[in-house]
Length: 376
Image: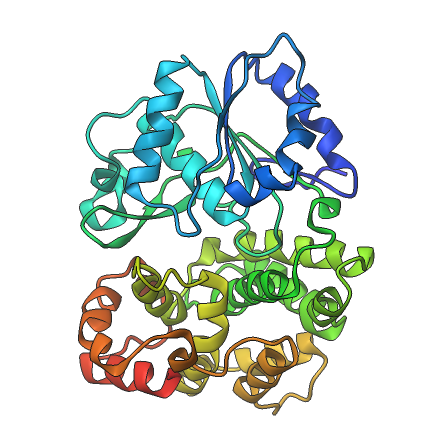
């Protein structure tokens, strides 16, 4: 089936087979595939290469890091230019898709990628980019339908690129590509999707359709126990289908914006020594922010609880903490290598994060410190 969204993603088991006709429709002759070493090592990249016509010239960049950075963008861009590519295919998790977007941006924009970040006024600078096709192999970021890309810059900042022009020209969401993903990757990615749904709903912006999509994503993750099922049985096709839908819905929903969970996870995720998984960071931080926001979101917690299949008065932070335990994620940032001496710099990063624009309760510097301590 084809979802009726801005870039109308193809969704469903076996939907990867639509790739040849998408390439033909977009009249692409020389795509650069951005993927990661892990997918290449297990032969996943061969699945899309084998589908592409021999008349199409393929270039392959397979060194996407776990958290895409400016150097990787420049390396992939160099390959793009050397081989005279005309488009980019992001194949993998959110990292590969975000990298693909940044490469497509810089292929026809001057300067450095950081010049186009929200922090540097980049929204007004971005125009039409080179075509991107996004094909997720995890269920978490929803980058295939989002207008954003997160890149760690050479100066150490983890910055956000946002523009309608960054939304992929086409997307393929094939849940079968996620069959057999390891439990921890499934868990971290799934909590990323859930956090997107929750933070989007809590955003003060008024957008009932986006909020409804977020509630449906929450229902699939928790009421239908799809995340727990996918973690416990990687071959559960129904759970995998639901989780990919929840991931896509999360990104659709966060057109409303995100919040302090992402401000904090972006700050920690910029650390190139820790190299922590974004979705896992969201999972660990989410209970703290749910407690922080509780008196600033009206009746939204009861709506979320209903979508989860819980009582209106359910303690959402406790539900998330218990879920993290059940799917094997860390109980706090300390377990992930974050130390208290890092907090001052993490605060500096958090206060400038664009996600703050839609957080229901903006922390003071003292509150940021307490939030990091509470998440430890």
